[in-house]
Image (tube, rainbow, N blue to C red):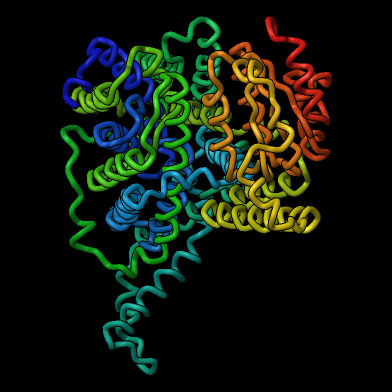
Length: 616
């Protein structure tokens, strides 16, 4: 094992360094977005990156905070802070405890072998969720891009003074009731305590209420007119310049991460020009210290409302990581271990939580950069994490001078990039039921609750799928005489006399039943099953009455892959619904011309015979 990890040391060194550099600005930005500060993003990138690489099941995976995980974490952080009267220091142990619980749940998912079942998440749910993540990031970052921070708007904060006084008075009464000294006929103690409340106490409570009012998507939309009216042009210019450099520099070269270039150029320029900008929160120096208060102050009642959120983080991190693992497999021609990967991700998230880091998952862009830069083993991911630790220890105080507007600009580009444009473009061509699922998940995620939106989307997808399959089964059910039952275990009868010489170059794939989201992973193995000697593949679809959006894209990927290998695909027995779906996204005729679609197997064989040389 040691030899395997340390093989190709030079490639892993360059891969890890490059991936670490790419991860730096994103870690800072995701930390700020989560509400815990840039240091939490760095801690997450360091500990998840190192331990997920060490214990995971994908050799080239680079892990750390990601947009989906940060979006869910942001909602969790805001909720727990609100229940602790806006006191982050008081809320932090409970926040980290939920993060730890999510990591342990991931480990349990890996141990119990759940990794192989992640594929059953339907595409419309994933598409709606990912697009919602992008929309949430974009809307919530509009305020910092405009240079508007609620805690600095004194006039707005003062409007919450009456409500703040009411909240404080309720706290006094609740404290007295808890102490058993509340007497309705005598409010002397209540008056005495209320007289000790200072203007600063009222102002602090008003700030908490104002920030809660402007949190999330709805709050950002409500605050947007005030932000526009009070725009800070310097902050807006810094954010806009960051966005311009990120997109513009990519046109010059992609060898150097444009996000890092934007971070350095704008930050260094703003610092040396001595511009009066808003810096990010202070990043503490020194090695991260474990937060043990999460254990000493443990109260299940404080975190019990967030158990489902922790489970959502666990599943979301698992899906995010395994999708990246598939990308890594395709690039490196290897095969990851899904359950081992979940255990590695869970261990990484658990350790990160103990040290105050936000949760994360396998990051596609960082993983691709690692592979392209020469990374081949787990060492590359560990090197990337160590590099971030060195930067934290050596440059923490310097990094604290980064303008907040720069990170807001970076997050704007992240929000734009994370949305599922493939799914959005397909809306006019897809079935109404699947479009409905995607839009419901999108809207509920943006304007209500990310966690519940995914659950509702899964329920809707399951109900719609079960109805369709039930209808199709009822329509096509037939009674087969017992004497013919053995044929079900044999080749289809019209294949029995298939020419022997054709078998060397023609591959037959029989599909029985619908091609849907639960079958796509197995179906995609089709391309790997076809031998190198094959020149044609006949895909028999006479028993495939239905194909959903996930199956459609799986079919498209398989056809593209075998076509690139010089293998000609032929359809036989294609039914009406799958054909309509394929025509809508141009699989027919771009990948399978109409002349290669046959209703009869003998005709398909006749075509193959006529197009293969040296066959009698």
